[in-house]
Image (cartoon, rainbow, N blue to C red; front, side, top):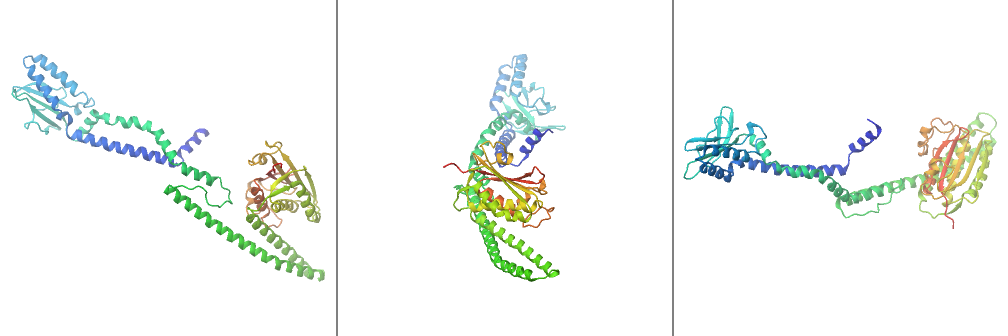
Length: 483
């Protein structure tokens, strides 16, 4: 099966409430109409409609009596009358045929060609009776003409066969169902789609939510089923929001309480380190200082992450990214110098975004610190900033995918380290996840903080291969509008 046909089949085979309701409507309609048709069929068949057509009996008796003196014309006329009145029965099968028998003056004057062998007049007049000959069984009704004594008997097969005979003769009852089902498909589909419009509105609102938007759904509806569902979703969102708030509060409080003892421990250990002599004691104290620094950095990043989650509603301002980059690289130059890393900045002037300054500082610091940390000693970290037009000229897919911007600021940070495998480039944005192949120590929070800041400002962040084989981080942010 080709790919287009396979995709079409998957779409058709995919469960759908619209299709389920549509099928339910059609099945219900078919069931009701079938029950109606079955009832009519049973009644007409059970009553032996052909045998209860009194007009048919009177007509046959009149023809037989009026043409009694002309046997040839009588037989010919009765044959035509038999063919006309029983043409709608039997489906061409002699076993299912409806037939007639006419006698006059004790002599048989006409017998239908399809009449069962051994057919005879019933002894009881004007009543349907069962008759049999060999394995054949049939129902018969006999009527006598007043005055002349002419007899006419109409016969049809007994048992379940009469249902088939009636269906063949009364099949027009099924015609409305056969004709209406295809025509009803479109109106039924449209009615279901219109009925599900409130449901679709709720689905669109939920689909448009970001992962951190746990506010109650704004859509309200008077329909009971939908109202119950929206209330359940809002209750769930409130529970999740309260749980997240408690979690953030706990982490922030714990991290804040840890800062003081960690700082005191570091001061005391560094004091002991200054007095220790060369040897095992100094080596152990140096390790303790290093561990305390890592713990302090983890606590600081936890606080930063909690603040970034809690400051979504803070006021925004115009942040000049070119000036911000210069300030932060100056602050981080000491860290770079300690590892012999050179920082290079190529920034276009007057590139600004509308956002929260502290959040942008966290984004820049984490990206540049990661590049310094995971790049080789004595390497180069290149930081770039440029303005892109609405079409993203000169940018790759990450900048082009920034749907919020008429014009975009593209921030890049490139190192010369080992990079990140393509298969892990989405997972490294998860909190506390680290590349298993990475030998440098870390908390696994830096990229999570950077991504949270980018998303909060309506931007996107992506990881690519650097020109020198390292990691290239690109952040696309919507530019602030000109005042």
